[in-house]
Image (cartoon, rainbow, N blue to C red; front, side, top):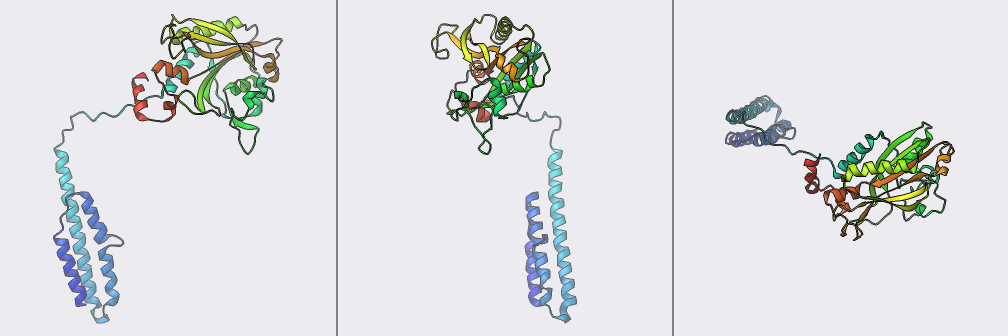
Length: 343
């Protein structure tokens, strides 16, 4: 019994001399003395060692000690709360608040929105589709033969559990899905992310973004395609840009062409961006192949159409002077915050 009384007196001296200067220290005091594993609970457990004739007296002493600790905690808490109140009363609430950092859209999103807005003015709606696609919508329906190089494992990410499924290599899969709906005419653009098994470098990546367009109706001609793309280029790059079409080959269009614009970095004089040619390729295009129309149950004798496709990263790199495509996907805030004013 005497040993218990001596221990309580020591604890009281320690508690009486304790001073807290902030809320953290007050909370530490509460945990140490009044917590579930605190000193008060521990010393209460010593009642089992007290002889029966002394239990009543010991119980009274322990209850008084517990009340002593609780009063000390209330005193400390009141003291720190008063300090906080006094401090807050000195604040000038009429002062302006601290500026919060302003977020921004990603440069790829800025370029995507710019491209989409131009084609929407021509009446193109926006369509989206799955990024994990089957072979039919990604290749076969687009008139790609079974052994076409684009099907090679070096270019395409296939799903190991089911080789018929893959990560789409272009957003043309959305064109097929829209044509299969049998709702003609079709005038749509398809923005989205695509994947190709390529070495990541400053100029290429294993995933990037595209915008593809599709227009199908009666009496659609290559002249309609050219005028649509002329309008897009003038709106995107300015009235003075020059345009040229070069014959090309794509399995899903016939005839096919690639579209170049005069380099707006050097004005056509020749630089590293245009590889000294004065021209920069920006997209591929052509008339939708009759086989593609037939694969989607569209009569190629009655309907014709054109399609085009372009990347988003390359135009964004040229517009914003970015020399490494990897910056778009590294989420470096120092890089991204430069586009805050471009939202």
